[in-house]
Length: 501
Image (tube, rainbow, N blue to C red):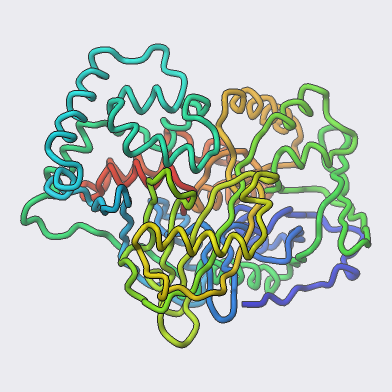
């Protein structure tokens, strides 16, 4: 999928009233709403692509969904926006993801016979006793992710289904991840609620696997369509245009400086909505903010991500959209089967494309590894896991790296974000939105809502505060538990530790 950029970088005028920085879900939603309401925005995207981490990457006829994006939401507003942005209905795709642990699959919705059969009666009883001990002797004060999960599930279940995988994702010990991250992502869940759901879903009960919406050509199809509509309505979207300065005075933004291919242009403006990482935005401000704000920005940490795409001659490697790999002996964290998202994601010729997902940080051994070595490692790992035979996997592969993919909730992040949000709150015409623009672990629909509310504020129709999106009050999975009694809580436990949706 190619997006026709208009205007070219050299044609950007010296003044544009409304500028949106970033063409991911938050930025493009804001731009679409502004354009729909008659305010024609200029969207500046530093990368060559549309959609941010929600884009669809192409490789020799195969389409790769970076991170996996199930389209589901409890927000009627988001559903309406999807309908407006897309020119065709989305597919209805079966939702299935399981944990792969010690060579066995753990089903979702969880079924007692499957779980006990995999773990064994003795280990299941040990987990129950560990849970009872945690309830009698809870950790106080509850500060870390480890504390939070142990108190609600017991140490044994924590070590089986949380610790290894979570540390693989975030690259830091669970003792350094804040408890409020767990509360946000898996709020309201407990050992008892997990067991009750498992009992309800066992036996002869009809399968309760749900479906989700999905564009037939991957998530980028939606965002390229949205960008095209912004242009059709008189706005402009320019890729490869990196904002290097944001000028402000008296609490109001006045201009941005943009660089592309060595050429620099200064564009005067009156309003800016930014989804670039907060740590980067602060460095681009002219004049620079107070030292405390600069220190807070410098203290924010991000987790990076890469995916190795492999061709597989078999299409039926597993029926899931993805599986979680809870095995410490391999470094892959999750494996996607793209045919199970949409058959049109796969090049002609049969088989499927597998996405081997690795969580890393720039400068570490994984991030710096040569592409051919990463492909070789991914091939070895999927064979060692017993998920494919060596003869099933093609020799060639493709590597995609994504910087600043996920904001890290370490011990200092909350204080840093509070300092930054308060300072930016004093700048009436500069709003920050999105996962990196708010340093908040947003799902796609959360980012869209933040972009929508920022656009409405710019239009003079203040309502919801973008910073109130994805708080415990409106948390998506809490609504799932309240409104969907057929959703298994343990799927939320597993899936929401991973960068998804």
